[in-house]
Length: 278
Ligand SMILES: Cc1ncc(C[n+]2csc(CCOP(=O)(O)OP(=O)(O)O)c2C)c(N)n1
Image 1 (spheres, rainbow, N blue to C red):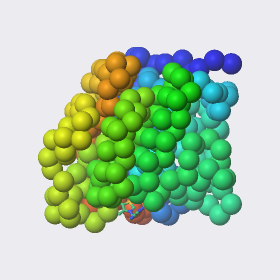
Image 2: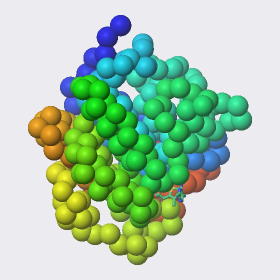
Image 3: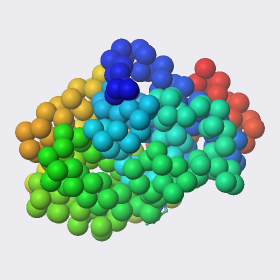
Image 4: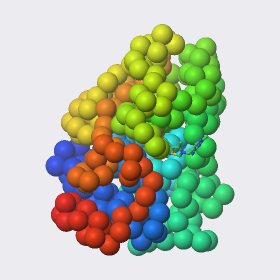
């Protein structure tokens, strides 16, 4: 029972990402609710993380040597559950139960129902603090495992995030790698109109962190950037990756609009979305 073998073939990874997008649309359509925009923007990030970067073991989810993953933007369960299913943590047919009463696959990750995620999440801003605590504990125990934390850019409006970023520097929690899904849109509008934090890269640097920027839909560049982040982390640096993405990526009428932050497609929209992905 070893760690999952990594996939490095870019075409294969692209194909996985395409299937994940189909899962996202189908799950939200079936449930009649959910968050397509931020799931579609994070699809390549999540595909590369789970199929190419993380050391993790679907045959033994609590393998003590696993890397940890925290979905701080907890509303984006469609992409997370699809990836977990496609890594064989559970059967793909289970995705049909997304957001159903008594299902394990609730709208936000619920560790009490489903022990596969490292933590419950969904209240924005908290996941980073939890991930930092996990990483610090691993570091104190001299473990090699890394902790990856995926955040939204709208989530950065939460003050707790900046408290964590200061704490992460103070204790040099360098086994934590933070990824910002920088799709520029939050629940009901563009970040720049709601609470503009740009330039975020300069803010992160001023807190003492290494900042890497990448096109969050380019699988080859994501692999290179994640490889580099691992090396920097091994050198004792605290790393934040800003992944530039498009909210709703892959479905023409969902792209770059807040309208599809948290809404299910109707029958016609579902057909159109699936056609675009075929
Ligand atoms: C503390 C808290 N406040 C408000 C919400 C409601 N909410 C859910 S998603 C969201 C917007 C998040 O935007 P962003 O982090 O950019 O996510 P993405 O665009 O990647 O979906 C909000 C305000 C929440 N989940 N938690």
